[in-house]
Amino acid sequence: MFKKIIRLLLGNRSPNNEPLVRQIAEQCLAEVCQLVAGRMDGMTLAEARGYVRARSTQVVLRQARIAIANSTDVELSAMAGLARMATERLIPQVIRKTHGGAQHPPRIAA
Image 1 (tube, rainbow, N blue to C red):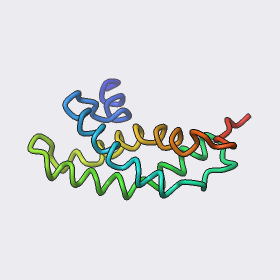
Image 2 (image 1 turned 90 degrees about the horizontal axis):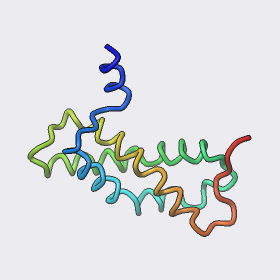
Image 3 (image 1 turned 120 degrees about the horizontal axis):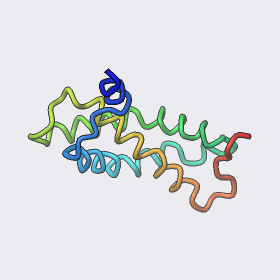
Image 4 (image 1 turned 60 degrees about the horizontal axis):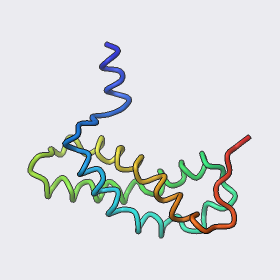
């Protein structure tokens, strides 16, 4: 039972999906950065992560659908898990890229 709970929380982290997750995240990076650029000033790191997660949802789901349609190994039922993993991979990349040279990077709440 414990293994089932862990699998449910972590999702399917099969190594076969890792290249697809990476591809989805890379294809979404520029568009998501454009969506959130300049809008995270004054946010804590947790707030910025949540904001990027919310703003990237539609972009990531669209790219996941395209990636699954082009893949012969992955079924449509895996889309939610792939999108979730791609989003979690994307969030730190977006925050780093949009705040790389910014004066006010997201702060860690005290």
